[in-house]
Image (cartoon, rainbow, N blue to C red):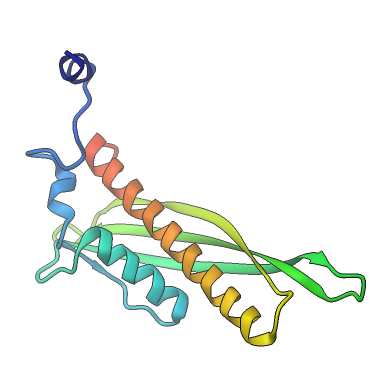
Length: 153
């Protein structure tokens, strides 16, 4: 009964038969990464969208990050940092050259800098990796939603 009421409201699964989003998997080439953040982003996007052989789409992106101190110890040492990132992205149809989905995603995370220098470096690297994976999920979700809903440009 629930399936009938959900289907009656126009709901359609993103990867349902005939859905434009279904054609995304293994069909999106992603700009090659130029740094660790780009590598982490592309790795997660490929987990979500697959690795193409003959792609119909090209996904371009630009990453901007910023780190700032959040907590200061009595000796004026920064013991916690917040990392923010914003990624502008665009998905282009290779055949027509048209942008079919674009936008900006952003988020933040934090890490502790109160341990040893090795522990702090590891926490910082982990924070950036988590942030890129989170933003990759947002990008993939936005592209799938745009193509599935017909909002693609």
